[in-house]
Length: 180
Image (cartoon, rainbow, N blue to C red; front, top):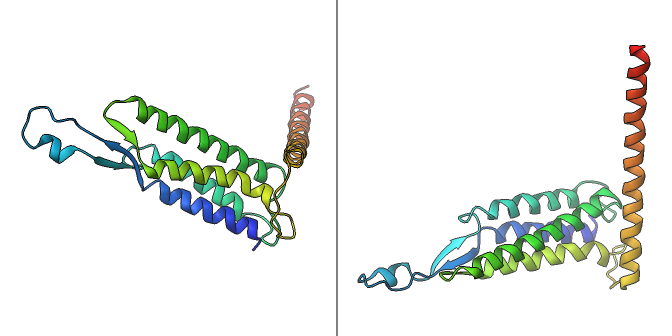
């Protein structure tokens, strides 16, 4: 299997594991009730306890699936698979940052290390498709190379969508002719 695919699949697996790690710490201040502050202070909730972890699990599983589908000896195919990894990873980064800010706004809770680790893994899955070449070598691309790669992938997706659109139009044209 291609090194880039393995790397993305492993990162997706780590991302799934991050969802069952601590995502927030709830700190209840002492309210005059003996022992209450001692028992509840530092309550840790995992990502799946918060219910937001299931979103992360699902999206990381999709990334893992995109990494495992296709020709195993080559890097992820250009077009939908490669852009899918990029877009889903970007959504995950944004999602984790929004959740971290939401946890920070509340006075009695704060983000925990599992949430930050999930955000870092999301960033890594976004960059890996651009780091590995088709021969399996690892290179750091320039911003121009990344921009060109994204444009090529977008053109491929645009061409595929146009083909699908043409098929749909042909089908509707045939249906209209049959009605006449």
